[in-house]
Image (cartoon, rainbow, N blue to C red; front, side, top):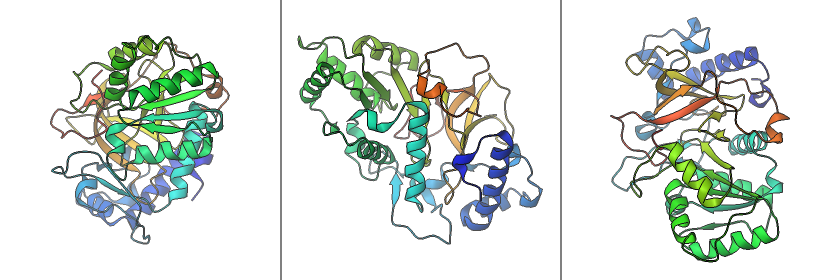
Length: 347
């Protein structure tokens, strides 16, 4: 099969999707049973819109893995010990690492240029987190001695941010939403806390987890911009069941790499799609999921942006490969779904 990272045209994407669908129908037993249950003849699927999307809940009760592969590596969704957690088995770790690197470089820049800090307490306290794996990998690529994680040691983080600002180093702070707000509550009451370095970028990963009063994504971004004194408040959208990431560089407007795409399905009819600009449930194509399932029906709500307002785009993005997919927004969760660890703020 053609390398997914070489996709440059809509025809490339369509061909790769159909190849992947047929491969996964043959080799992913759970997916094949699902397609058969729907009475869909795979030989008659000739368009991307006709590919069946596996409900994301299937990762909670089934092993979604190519039967020809063996692996001990898996990622697990966050949650309490009483919850039935999703497991995503990873047969090709190299593919995941390449997906992380290429997405990050396309939308943000070269990892080697940044110091990476992680304010991700709810994820550090759990094992087998795909988010922690991603940040670990970026730290490894960066190789900076200042790279590191912080749980609730806000004073230590504040001191390091001040030191890096004085040294004028490029810093990326990955943070879960409630932890970023907690840090600002601490830092803004500290006389040492001033405006952050112009070299600081915040990448929030969603997730209030009942720790803070719910607010819209726009409200959250506004608080973070004012508190940290930077317009570079970005967002990352992914989940345990994916091996690719979409990034928002502002305004809660996301873009995905050429091997990942969001489609918006009708919440009343899961086999049809809504018009661009209308909200619905998010279906995700992630071709990096070569050996699990690339076609996932999530419980997130979103919409395709028809005419997005202009927003600041870094030079690294403008010079990067053309993005085939539509820009999209994530609007929250379907009401009847159970709460997942990477839940996003309602916008």
